[in-house]
Image: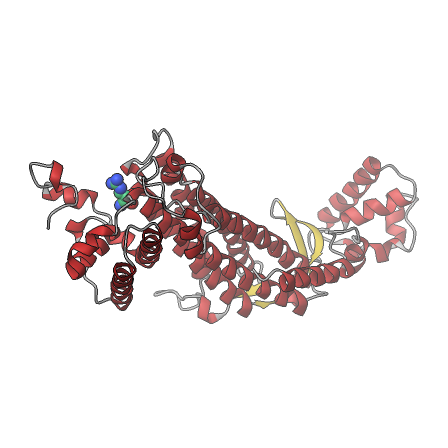
Length: 461
Ligand code: ARG
């Protein structure tokens, strides 16, 4: 088939080059947006007096029909037609003859591909936000179910201080709530219409660009035609939002991998989300969590890949920009899948709260409370820290925990210790004491569940 640029060329494109430059194998994912953009453009051309009402009607009907065929999988994409835009335009010309050739008036593939990608990003940002919301609701649900259960909190993966299991869960609620704001921002960055920018300088037709934007559900037209066709910031915003979300999912997965080991045993993964070994009959492996953790790497790669592609590109459109799509598609699919599978897994995980409670007996997790007790009795914190450090060192030598201590024994370390210290050393007292805003005290955590629930109700995404 003749290329749209054949007029200027003496020879046909080398077959290898045709294959090398083609993007239809992946950019066909933009087909629905390309059709929507073309319909909006046709209507705008009609307004500008370039197309008659009848022509616009026929174009619109045929475009809709092509869209339906693509959706149904009955449309044949051809590699020699390079990309999704030219495939659709060729089909249009084949069906409508001369009229098909009129659609590209006042348009370039440069503003066309930009509008398609913007619509894609806007839609996928919305889906990622839906996925995040679903995951946050599962987290809230689990936090409500387990309010009261206490687990060891860690720093350096060493037992640190007791925290509520719900507090741990809500930490992830915060992360996934911030992620939604990042996706919202990416969606907003994409939410402008470049149509009317043409190849780079604008077009010599009186296109009502606000009208086009309105038809596409976009907030308005881009303000500079050169920027419009070379800007890919909105994709980078999306990729960054996806990368950070994957980082959070990966950290959660990592904790689930650790917590589901025989050594920790804090969680029991649902059978439906684990896999076995082909040789070791006893195995139940956390593959789902591992794969989510593993896939964060490819999404980081997607972000870096586009950053590097963009670096040093002269204005305006350069073919390098075609390399924006595969990372975008990959990241969008990956993050949406990972959000879905993580929500499903978390909804069905069993938390072994007895096991957590037994783990709290080890690791001297109330040592800070012991030091704070001495501070309450007038000792300075540094000295209190050292005194408790000596107690811990001694008990460690004896292979014992705080529970073995009597007030008399404690007095050997400091005369400031009294009977009431025994109560202070309990896990319950430790969490109760942390009633500062944002702390792990049960009353605070309950408050935070309420607050998060209210946020979920009022903000629908
Ligand atoms: N397939 C191209 C892309 O994804 C479409 C735009 C091509 N424009 C051009 N002037 N070659 O970037």
